Length: 100
Image (cartoon, rainbow, N blue to C red; front, side):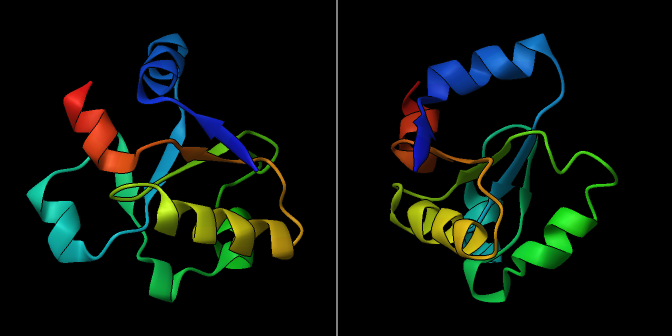
């Protein structure tokens, strides 16, 4: 499973548009979240539907973030199990993002 540090992710954001999903609960998301992230809670995550909705950008990396990394790993595994391998977990999650 691929991972990226918050600082590497910030560099990717500066180079252009990225897609970042936050798999925490909506309450957690409202408290603090990474810039450009959109909330897609883990318990309602549908990898196939999400990839289909990307409008031709399914080959671009999809970045996944949670609070500390564990739910992000589970989400990435869901994508991999569904046949989508170009997913990247943000190491340390939102906690590390906020600290960086």
